[in-house]
Image (cartoon, rainbow, N blue to C red; front, top):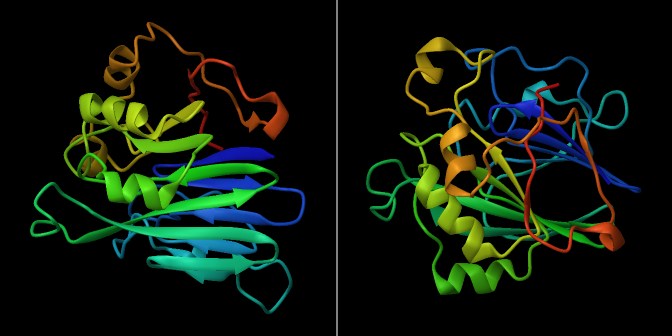
Length: 220
């Protein structure tokens, strides 16, 4: 499996049989990479920095990707996706509404994209998610959980690999980036003094790290 960071909270996961793009964003956030294709697109919530499905092309001409935009269980092209209902804030959605955490199972791996999660996970939500190998976690605060809570959520999930997202970056619109913290606070909370960014992550089910790791990915 190959994991590519598209910027903000967007990733492309390319497996043996299918590919998934998670939380594509519109041009007001940043310039989305060109010619991104996927069989499946997941949308954690209906905000333009997470729901720009028109930025992603389908696997063949004239057809778009299969879009998943809410809780439930889905099976598409041999890929299992579970949407778990959560909130965009710590007030049960009263401030920013709902958020969906997606668990994608493919190539023998289980990946969880937390979207714009605004709170620690409940036991019920963790049970619905099940065992997780790789977690994509927002760390920038303001719109989502902050670095401290993000580190606590990573421990809750017990994933072997944690990939931070949704933090201030040079490529992000200044109006958005100015409200977000950088990735450094999260790395500190995770006990990592320095983590070199990688262009992509290639991982297989039989070669997961034996100890939990933090992987920072470069934007495509």
